[in-house]
Length: 229
Image (tube, rainbow, N blue to C red; front, side):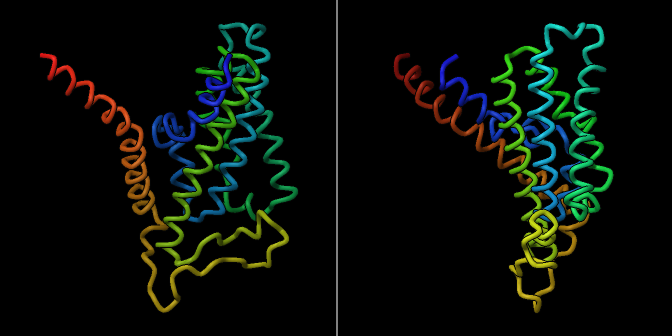
């Protein structure tokens, strides 16, 4: 397989097939944990680790796993890596564990991870599956971080609150004050309606960015056909 095709696999999940904004998968944790940007980073990194590891293992075992029980086998593999992540987070990043709550163990049934196992890893080689996991993980993490940034800045007036839980060398209570405390924040952005609003806007932006190049390419072709007629 050429370098261009491998690069395409790696970058596909960032925008063209972004798991949240284009495939509309994993919306429950996306809406639940993105009240702060740091939570989005933590959830994204945890999901990326599980995505890459489960893709690699499932791809390596794709010719061994019986077709009749493939889904239970995929879930077992995914659950194993989620357990590893959960134990590591509990041991070393306890504030993140408290912030993510039940959504960390629920990565087991995250449609993004199971979907990539079924749609890609079970049909492709180990290297390509690893690249697919990395690309999808980057797209998921970027989406959660951007969404969390918008909601936190507008809803709380701060940015990266709780990042000291991910990076212990930061001072306790670390945060960047973006909007002066004299201005009342738009608190609805940290609640469910604000999450749905930001999610909808970001989906619309992603759709526009991915369809615009196709329309621009199609326009000259249509004009040329009209001239020839």
